[in-house]
Structure formats: C-alpha cells, structure tokens
Image 1 (tube, rainbow, N blue to C red):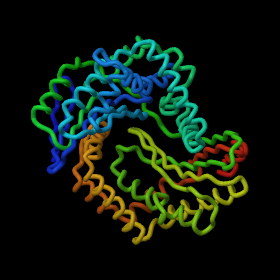
Image 2 (image 1 turned 120 degrees about the vertical axis):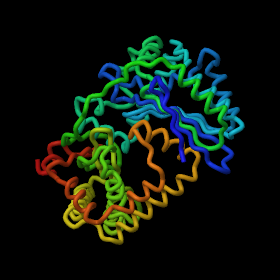
Image 3 (image 1 turned 30 degrees about the horizontal axis):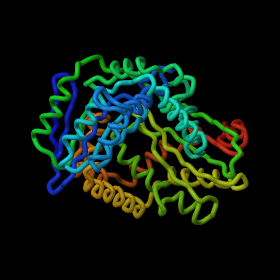
Length: 416
C-alpha cells in the first residue's frame, strides 16, 4: 500500500515500503517533455537531461560520476514527449547518498558553457545514431507525419539547428521556468526510513511554486511518408489512430495490441513470419499520449516481399476488426498481462516507476488488484468493437524507409 503526500507548493511525494527488500529506488518525475517545447526550443528537455549529469555547484562531472558508482547501484534518466525522469536504485544503506546526488543534480546543476559545448556534440552523435537505425528512423518519421506541425511531431532529441542556439544560461533559465513543483512527483519504493521521507519532503518543500507549463491539444491525421535509404531491408510501419493513455478502455487496447503483435503466439507473428516466412521481425505497439495515440504495426522485409507482407498485415487487422479474437486468444493475452504485472511488482524499481509515472501522467495510482480486475473485465465483444473502431484503412498511415517506392505509391495502396 502506497502513501501520498501533497505539499503546499504543488509537489507530490509517493512512498511504498516493500517488506523484505534490501534496496530502495527513488525517482523524480517531471511533467516536462518535448511536447512542451516551442519549435525553436526543440530538444531542450532532452539536452537538460544530459546537462544534469555534467556537474553541480558541489560536484564536478568526474566527482558526480564517482559518487554514482560509489553507491553500487544505478543512476540514470530519460526524456519522453510527455515527461522527464531522473532515478536511482541502490542498497538501502546508500539511500541517503542517492537522495543527495539526485537532488543536487536536479536543483543545483551548473550548466557551464564549456560543458554545454561538449555535451552538444554527444547529443548530435545520438541523433546520428538514430539516423543510422532504420527501426527508429521509420518510427520517428511516422510521428512527424501524423502529428505534422505540432510539438508531438518533433523529435525528442531536437535537431542540429535547434541545438546550436542553446547556451548554458538559456538552458538553466528554461529549466527554471518549466521544472515547477506543480509538475513534479517524487517516488520512493523499497526499504527506507521516516527520516529519509522527511528529507525528501524538505527538499521538495523548498521549491518555489510557479505557473505550470501548458500544452496544446494534438490530434492524429492520416499521412504517408517514404524515405529512400541504401539498406538491405525495407522498414515499414502501418499505423491506425487509437486511444490516448487517459482513455478508460486502455486495458482493452493493451490486450488487443498483445494478441495482434505482442509475442510469438500473436496473429502477426504466426501469419507473417511463421506461416508465410516473409520476415524475421514483426510486431505491433501502442504509442499513446494524453490526448491522442496510434497503434502501429512494424516489420522489416526485402523489397521483393514488401507487397505480400503489407497485404498480409492488412488481412490480419481486417479479420480482427470483422470477427474479433477467439476466447482462447483473450484468455492467453490476459494471463500474459497479469503475469507481467505481478512479476513486475516484485521489482523495487518497477514499483517506484509505477508510482511516479501513474501519479504524474494519470493523476492517480491504481493498486495491483484493481489493474488485475480491469484485465479480468475485458470481453471478446469489447475487443471486437475496439478493433473495428481502430482498424479502418481510410484512416491508416504508412511510413517506409529503405529501397522503397514513392509516398504516392503507398498512398495508392492505402486507397487514397
């Protein structure tokens, strides 16, 4: 059972003791991601994530790295379109140091200009790495197309043009303006003391309240994009508008995604790979935001197999929309989801992540038993209706990277 403390300045602290644990996981979740950036600021949230590891008023970059390694655990961070997270996991004996390191990074980073110049090069190399990874590139281009002209259509990492103008002073100011306590959640799970909870409260209470960054609502629009690249396989994503993560039917969407392309027994894997041998990799995934979302089907195939693979995927989703799943399929993916949930609950870090992300993104934390009940309540009829709502070819989108045809040729295949 977790505990939640809401502080007067708007920050929230969630804690959950786990009997028998000898470790603790601490995370700071900030409701600021790439969608909160203006076009000319693209990449700021991710750049700040990097800069927080480049030293503070009390620690140099090297000292910060040594202190992280000295706790014998893990300190890391990530940036999404919706939020940024900084977290640490260590033995409970080192929790005080984990708290000190994370709070020092988050609230006292120095943003030295020489560090900005160095780290800008690192981020540009990261951008290049994504450019050289077709699976990432085809997904990035899909988002850019279906959310064209909006913050959700811009890359989390930013671009060389937008990053070039960012100075240490500018990044420090951007962080101060956006990292407000009203969009900050701290989550602590595992083995800890009341003294450490009080220390976290004191840390969060010291933050000055301010206006919470706003975000514009975004909607999915069907689109087709093709990028020629001299690689062996064509990488493809066929996507359909789906649910936001705030939709009450999200448990249905997760089960639908699982039975469509979530594993070796899924319809896509069995039909496209096992029966027809058209590819090595095929899967589906849900990309959902607070106000929009889509369900994508990814595969990588030779140019000669592309047409047959796409047609097969279309047949699979159309059959699911027309007839829904069998009871055996529903029972199987339901048990998979419940097993993943229960086994994940045995991880201190997973429990911490669930507390922080749920409180920040959903505004509430569902206990394990409640989530199990939501999965148990899903019916075949609900999944059939949801599949029929989602898998409509006139609203489908397609992204292609490789020795591919023109965007117009794919649009014609979609019936545009």
